[in-house]
Length: 614
View (cartoon, rainbow, N blue to C red):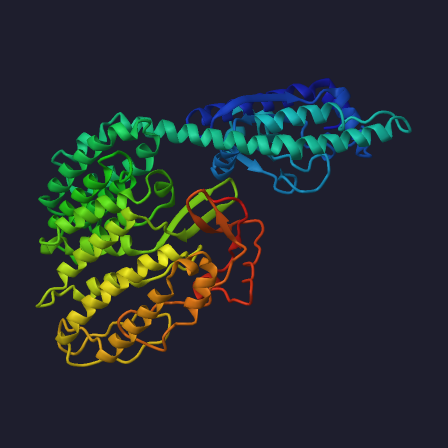
């Protein structure tokens, strides 16, 4: 069909083709709720515009119009977000309803080039109706006619219309070329600097709204009441998992709802413990069903999120973890409960900045009270080990950076009391005869002798750890006669506690205890008011006192130096490591000839942050 034929009668056929394609897409997309359509446009190219395009392409009016213009008939699908476009493109809508000319089909993607279409996103399909449709009499005249379908977002559509009316239609030759080039550059800048970021921001807003709507729909099914009902553990596990992922992040008054949620979780655990496991069927395939241990893990995931939600969070969390251990029948379930106890007792930077070691004080009292319950001793050990850890940690995040804050705990009377009660709880476990979990208890006890690997260690913290270490040595000395054999001397910076071939026997040689006590006595002698005035000088002197080897509690001393990456806050000294997907700087070197601790230097792709830790 040449231009004259098109102008005389052909345009009507292309008009019908564009209208038919738009109608087909409208019906199909109405049944696809995941693809939100803002508008469907269609048109046949006007004779004047078609003539100009043929001339710009270097053709003649006697040529076939489709050889110089693939959009003689056009249909444009305008969708809301990039995800809507992606869902449509990944579907089979185009393949199932049209024959596609892949040689003339073109996809535009955002590039870093400074061309006018550098950031434009559009999927342009050149299609014709399938033979099954054109074989019908009402579509017979549309056979072998091609139509261009453009799929793009509302933002890209607005830019495309603006670009079409400015850059796409240049003025006469020799007039306004420089101005038009500047306009093209500005159009590219508008797309790259404003419209592309806006498109992704709209996409994030759309995702948030969709997640909120999904959460509201699920919340209206009353999930907390359903987990208490007589249902199988497959459904109960699915409800708990969906509740944690979809509902819990959107609860406005989490403090007020925390106890209600915990009560539902308690009832859910009791129901799950008495419910038999049933298989899951996928068609004819039978899959292993969810067990009580799976429900327990899903329950504790929610409990961990609520541990600091209200004033009763520590006690309520400890009671729920204890209930889980009482109902558990496997070591894996007990280990998962121990992980929750350790997470509860861990020194959290955000909690410390608000209430100091209050959580550790409350938890130490609860752990000491439960020492007499053999089933809950693993929880006591895990909680005590976390309390005795001298490091405080926390994380903050931005749009493209995650910052890990690590530092030493701030010594205080409350912290000393919590550590003392934790040591007392572990000592109560290590009674004669030694229980089966004596090794775990002793390893946890030795955490009281550890020094922090990050942050500043001042004299008060050293004195606190030294005092607790002497108490640990006394406990180890009492346990030493229970072991007839001695272990080999470990290397520096390792805590080695060997057991003899006889069960529940600790190895702690007398000569090691003597060296250990003499070493710490010298350390305490250094801890004078004069030395405390200069913690850095004291720590350097302390570093030269590291022993050759000892079994009952080797301390990783290293070489203490003043790191230029230590950060000051009103109460804590922190070392911050930022993980950034864009840039990564190496760790700053130690000053005064010191060397970085082995744990710090072993981290990869970590850059030291320079902003105050929070």
